[in-house]
View 1 (cartoon, rainbow, N blue to C red):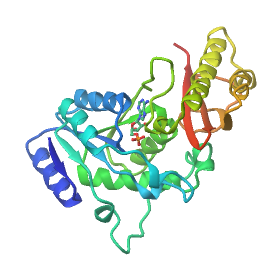
View 2 (view 1 turned 90 degrees about the horizontal axis):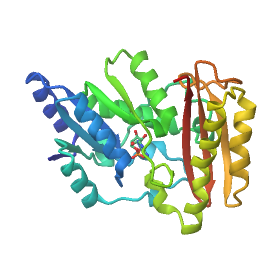
View 3 (view 1 turned 180 degrees about the horizontal axis):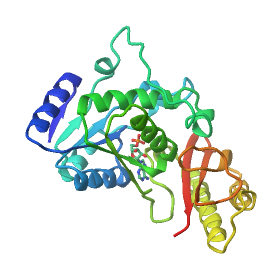
View 4 (view 1 turned 120 degrees about the horizontal axis):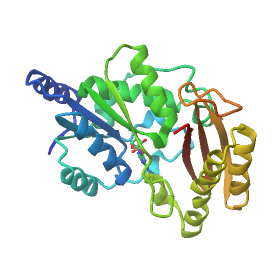
Length: 282
Ligand code: AMP
């Protein structure tokens, strides 16, 4: 595995691969890798000839009172995991290389980012679309893989690629969970034992709603009531949002028609966790 830390070097590598006719796959990450990330690497390898994993904790997507300064990292562990998945390039640009003094350009997607995480984290998606644009221009991927865990991010990136005619295939990877149901996340490392136990209510609440959906319930309020009753029973949790939305536009829906996304953001102590479930006709 080669490590590259400069955008120009990354682009040079990519153009060599293109000339050789190879399809490039990209998996953007912020590091502290877990099985969820590695499942995306495997998907990228299935969909491309060569695979790039990027590792960059992007300051632009963190709010002033968020966890940028304490975001977990394990450079050596990440490197070993990516090596063992036969990743070809680890692209780990420095903050200086990404945002040189005087940097002032943003890429933004306006509608799909308005609600849910966009409402709770102003500027977050702007930071995401900006950094992903820069990663796309450095790596020149034919295919890029993102997790359904961050479903609004996935929808935003699909929209950006379509709107800007970039012709990059965007593949979504299913949520990878711990054995007890907790969605894997680098931020799970922040949880105390009690908080981790309480956090199980997220996946449990989605499970309750899914069961009701399978038994024929299609009403948004009834499904959300199932979710809220599980979440509010946990004193350590504070619900930021629990909503039923269209999985492409993220507009709220009052009924599950063709399909709808149940999306949650919940604070467990100082840690903000998200999870979701796609309810769709089989
Ligand atoms: P992050 O490092 O948290 O920015 O995540 C990098 C990528 O991994 C994003 O596309 C996430 O959606 C994805 N991801 C994070 N956690 C999971 C998970 N539990 N299952 C699947 N994908 C995930």
